[in-house]
Length: 456
Picture (cartoon, rainbow, N blue to C red):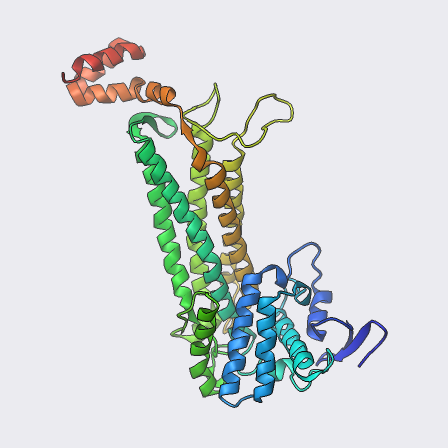
C-alpha cells in the first residue's frame, strides 16, 4: 500500500511501518535500520564475502526447492535469477542493516529474504516492491531453512573464501624470508637473549626461524579453515533437521557445492556430525580465530624485531636498513621511522582484539543456541582482512627491500661475548675465562687470542 509520494506501507507481525517507495528491502529491514543506527559503523553490505555466501545458500535452496517440488518452478527460478543478479551486480544500498543487531543474525537473513522476494516479484511477475506476491520472504525465500543454518553455513563459506587471501600472503612472507636468508647466507649476526649479547648466528638462522614459525601457524590455521567444510544447512533453528523436508536435507549440499564450484569458490561442504552442537556453539569458527590470534602475535613480534634491528641510525642496533618510505618527523629533519613494521604491529593488535571478542561469544551462549554469530563472523572477517593488509604492506614496502649492514654485523658478531664463546670452543672454558679476566673488556685483546687459537 502506498502511503505517500515517497513511501509505501508494509505490515509484519509487530504492526505497520512506512518504507521508502523505491527501497528494494522491506519492513523488517526498515525496523532493523531504525532500531540499530549505524553511527559510522559497518553494514551488512560492507561484508561482501558473507553477503555473497548467504546468497549462494539462498540460490542453492531455491534450486533444491524446485527439484523437490516444494515451490513452483517459475517462483523458484525468479529467486535464483534475483540471487544471481545480486552476485553479479552488487547493490550495497539494498543491505543497510547494522552488522551487529539483536536476534542471532535475523536482520541479516530477513534483509536478504526481502530483497530476493522483491527483486524476484518485480522481474519475474511485474509486481511492485512490498507486494510479496506471489513470492513471500518467509514462505518462499526462506523455505526449508532458517536464519540459524543459513547464516552459520554462510559464515563458514565466507571465512574459507577470506582466509585464502591471507594464507597466500603469509606463505609469500615466509618465502621472502627464505630468499633473504639465502641471499645473506655468508653474513653472521649477533644473537641476543633477554636483549643482552649472546652468540653469533647466521642471518639465515634468524630469518629461517621466523619463516618456520609463520608456516607452523599457517598450517594450524589452514587445518582450522579446512574444518569449516562441515556446515549445518538443513539443521534449521537448533539442529532439528526434521524442520525441513527430508528431500531438501539430502539435496541441499550437492546443490550448494555445485554452485560454489561453478563460481570458483571453495566447495566440498559436508554436513557436520552433530547439528545440535553447531547450534549451541560456533566451535570451528572460534578455532580459526584462535589460530589467527597466535599468527597475529607472531607477526607482531617479527615486526618489532625489524624495528629493533633497524634502530638507529647511530644510537641503535643498526644491523639492517629498512626502506625509507616516508618522512618520520614533522620537526626533526632527515628522520625516518619504521612506519611499515609499526603498521604491521597495529594490524596485529587490532586482530588480537577481534580474536578476544570472538572468544567471548563462547562464554555467553545459552542452552540450545548461541546467538552471537554476527560478532563471530564480523570479527573473524575483520581479523583476516586487517592481517592480510598488514602482511601485504610489510612484504612489499619493507621486507622485500631490506638490506643488511655488513660492516656493522661483522663488528657485532665478533664482539666480546661471541669471541669468548668461539675461544671456549677452541681452547676450553677455563682458558677462555682467564682470557676474559685478563682482557678486562678489551675486545681486540680477545679477538687476537681467538685468531691465535684458530686452526691454521
